[in-house]
Image 1: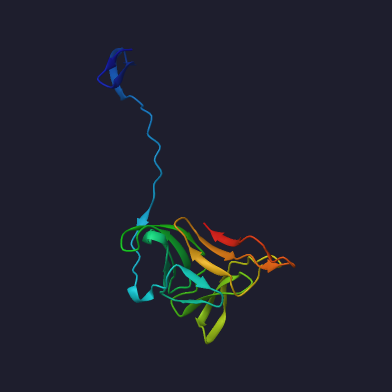
Image 2: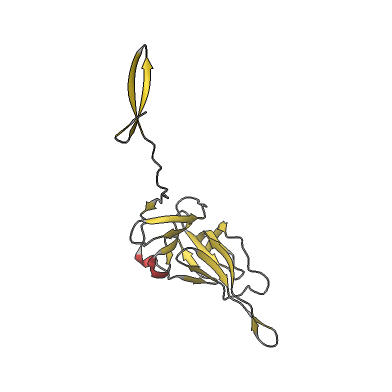
Length: 181
């Protein structure tokens, strides 16, 4: 065999005729991770900061932005709650979604004091049942009105701050109750 400009010459025989076929040489492909980017239509009036406290409500079309505007979480008008990486004003990567949808309509998400984060059908004053819940509850001693949902650069989390206990006022450490992705 002889090399010809990045190809391999392979002798072939057809009905008594000999010829050389040129086959492209296989080269290792660099490993690349493909990240699908998309544009998400956001209403600037729907921005609700980076933290949602206990009993806090996020309505359809509203979103929370992470530090440096490099991530955000949004409750879509079909009930799907999603976390995105990237600047909300540019193409972003969808990192995680609840994948619970029920068609276009009114939805609201609420964070309960036990750390459970739920998306409900209807408006806050006129709820029509749950669509999705994180189903993670704060352990005994953590559930309080100080629990919060936060959008960070890499994920969204429900955090239960440590509570004071005992005669000397010891404090339990903060506890992450739920996070995605």
